[in-house]
Length: 88
Image (cartoon, rainbow, N blue to C red; front, side):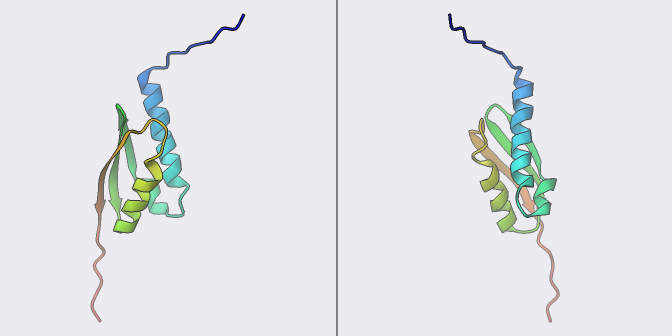
C-alpha cells in the first residue's frame, strides 16, 4: 500500500524559506552591495528594498530573484543612490 504523506507548513515558514532563497540568489552574485538588500515576501509578491549605486545593480537584483520558486511578482523598491563625481 502506497501512502503519501502530506505536511501542512505554516505560511510564515514558507515565506521565510522564499525570502532566504532570494537572499541566497543575491549573495551568490559578485556584487557585495546586493547582500544589503532587504527582501520581504507576502502572498506571491517579493519586495526588494534598499539602496544600490547604479541602475545596473538594480537590474541585477531583479533578475537574480525573479525566478525564485514561489515568487509570482517582484516589487522593485530599490533606490539608486547616484554618486556625485567632480568635474575635471
